[in-house]
Length: 434
Ligand code: UGA
Image (tube, rainbow, N blue to C red; front, side, top):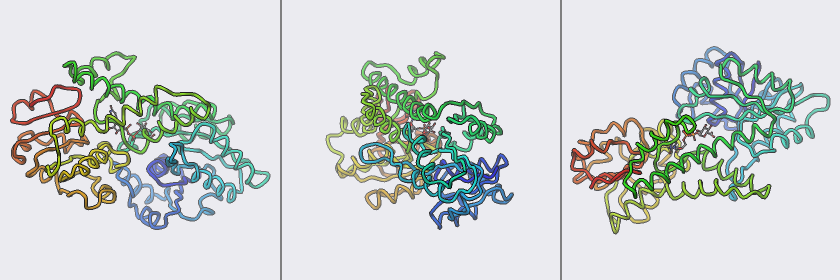
């Protein structure tokens, strides 16, 4: 199949590379000339484990191409994936400008029957609207059929997920188009679910909202555990063994971040609101998450009357391990609070330092390693559970800091181990060690 992918963000690029890997001839289209130049040389613009090797391999084997020319990209493609961004509008709704622009360009350049697959996360009803927009602007006599194919990739394991995901959802009102897209996806060896277009759009939002709900739920339980003297790790394990609940996504911490859950939960609130439905549960999930992102700061304030002039280290900036993405990261919420209190903040992350610099500028000090971030500090906040951070021996905190006080937002250490050291240790949903 000759496939074009419009948009080379994390979804578009991973999709394009993996579609090439299973044997398609894929052209990735983006308007950013510099980025396209780099990608042609096999330089990946994001941090995503496994992507670079696969990208270089498929470029070398002449199945993967990059262009900034819309005509070349769209004119002779059999299938066009739209994977452009849907950023958040001020009111929380999804901004569809880029999706609409892509649809108009496709209508303008496509000269034969083509299937347009919408990968971008779009509010329910958008695929139908894009179909209508295309119908209005396309050349007469050709068929351009829109199919919804939401993505469920996790940043940091996106390549793995392409080949090992739980399901592929294909939403179409046209049986023929659906079966062509199903055929393209067959080599991934993942169960395929076919639905109508609106159900596919809804599956994406419902899945992310449900996962966000699980996180806010376990975080609330963690907060209660602290007050009643229970241990959240044991409680999460105990409930997770019930197959109806399942063991995943029950890790208490400092809330969910990233480019998906915060945006998609708010967008689903909008979708519900537009049809005059008050989604009370999801509203609470969002509220709980906002509270939870402040948890380490709130705990610190319970211990110190003032953080002014305190030397503090923040370990981990990415919204989760194995990514350089700091969008909506709990680290930023915490750091802002610390800076407002005039603490002296040193930060470290294994890969997100450059992204952090573009947001935090010179308001913080950037350490070269986790160990050097700890040297001479009074307080450390553990924000992201990178292996490199989880593996720091507890003795290192004692060696590097005077009298270590650790606020661990990801429960990286075993309480019994911590007790062996002269460390003040405050974690989530577990007893404090003081
Ligand atoms: C999420 C979904 O997991 C993907 O299925 C979906 O495709 C993607 O959004 C998207 O819509 O594009 P992602 O944002 O990459 O993927 O990251 P997750 O691994 O889901 O983690 C999200 C946040 O939840 C992180 O901040 C993480 O620290 C937090 N989390 C996750 C917890 O606090 N506890 C958990 O048990 C799990």
